[in-house]
Length: 319
Image (cartoon, rainbow, N blue to C red; front, side, top):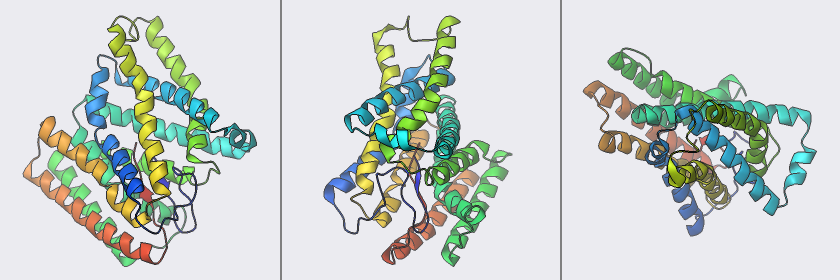
């Protein structure tokens, strides 16, 4: 859900700096589990129909907040939040709003048959993260990173020409995701406490939205059976479980391995959109995606090389 920061930073999704230097079987399994769950999200959200995307988003936020509050209580981690300064709460709020945009757009993409464009957003997200490092943190990119960004830019242009419009949904997903990771890297909280803090900020708003749906008779918590209600509640653990798996993996698996495995998520999304949903892929669009994959090969090769010198680069996770 967030990213490993630039040099000297820590992960906003693990419980500390990523310091693993050797492969760990359980860590790799946890990473594969996390990315596989994220990659199969397009199979889950449609199960919540006939709930509207906004209602699904509200339930996702509310039940995730409830679950993470319970997890933080078991971990006895509430002291972290009590010690968090007002500036930290402001950053948590900003991060929460960004991930709300990201989650909402992703659910909308799945409900409207735009899974492939959503996958594009998460394919280019690592490159957006390195650009943010340049624009916001004044970091300097290596030649290979500039090459990857340039190839990805050409890919976006090709896809825009093919469709007659820029891939706005993919760009907003990648941008909101990158900014979320950038902000989260400044919040001095562990993964569990950070996600719980976002729930405390966003939970009341989500509950208000659910209440409006129910009071106006457009909600789906009642009248659609216990199975549907359980699916709405399941949005919480479905969101939290891959995050907790990723947090475990990030402490056990080298950064370069995490950086390669992360592409499992958008790859599964892409395959779901093309093979299961049957989204149309015109030849020009295929060219655009091939260019994106070339850019990611360049980026990943540079990531592996950089990891050998212990200089972390941005590694986004997932929604």
